Image (cartoon, rainbow, N blue to C red; front, top):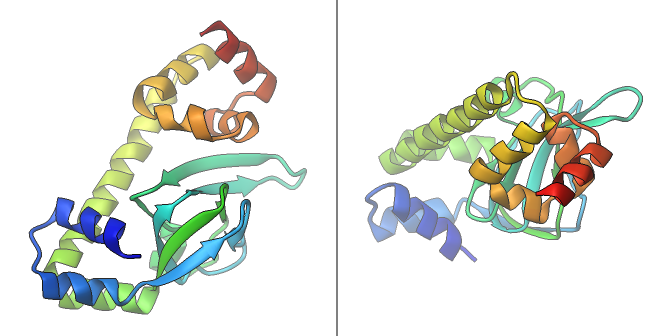
Length: 189
């Protein structure tokens, strides 16, 4: 149950088995269905998730029901509604599994306890934050001034797993284009 998490931690920091076990025991297993909402728009985020299997997305929805996907996370990665997790205010976004998933969940209290007590976990948290920032910046700057075709080419180069595992509707909302435009572009590539 913890092997993927432990492998991830070992890849990021030098850690002894006792510390690794201590970290692992703070996580509990959560099995979800496809399209299960983990966090609603108006809820405060109290959990961080590590994805053993499946995919999770962060998205917002307009009053008329249009969804805008902001981020996708796959196996071997952490995911949460970070602003809400940090400042404990309503998320103003949704956290949802898009596939049947197996997640390891840690509470906010336990997460920050590990940050305080286990230096390797604090280092891991810093790396997660830095990586998240870099991915967001690359997407923002990568999409500025791009037309629909350039956006799809950017995703193929930087995040190819998205086109393989994400529906056209969700992918189009991530790219800021219509699903029909995405289908047309994909058929030409």
